[in-house]
Length: 183
Picture 1: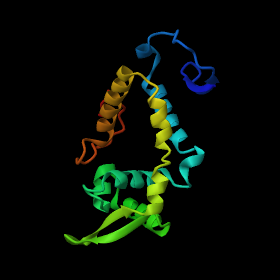
Picture 2 (picture 1 turned 120 degrees about the vertical axis):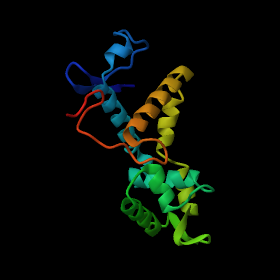
Picture 3 (picture 1 turned 30 degrees about the vertical axis):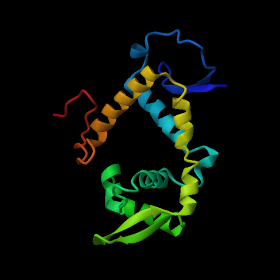
Picture 4 (picture 1 turned 120 degrees about the horizontal axis):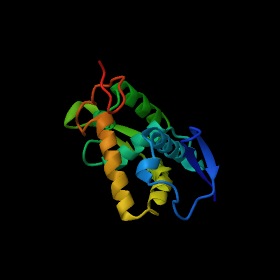
C-alpha cells in the first residue's frame, strides 16, 4: 500500500511506501502549519472521492448528517445554519435540492408555522448508512487513544479559531496569518 505525503522540502505531495516507524526529526519539528493544512485538506477531499459518495456534494452530506443527529433537537433550516455557520440562502438551496431528490421531507412546525421541520426520508436513511465519513472514521479507528485525543484537541482549537464556539458568530476574518498582527 502506498501513502501520499507532503514533502516540505519540495513543497509538493509525493507517493511513498508507509514506514513502520518514523525515523525523521520529532513530529513537532517536522510538521509545519502549511503542510498539516494540506494533509487535512487532502484527507477531507479523499472522503468525497470514494465511490460511495452516492452523487451527493459535501454540503449535501453535511445536511444529511446534521439531520441524522438533530432528530429531536433542532431539525430546521435555522438549526442547520447555526450548527454549520452557513448563510440561510446556502442552506435553503441545499435543502431544496435534497427535497427534489426525495431525500428530505419538509413539514410545518406545529409550534412555529413560519418554519419547517426537516426529516430524512427512508431513502436518505439508507444512504446515510453508507456515509463516506465512515471510511475516515475507520482509518482513525486504527490510531491509538493518545493520538486521537491529541488530534481531537488540536482540531477543536483550530475550528474554534476559524468558526468560533457553537452558537457564536464566526470570528472576524483578517488578512493576518495566525500569530501575525494586521496594522
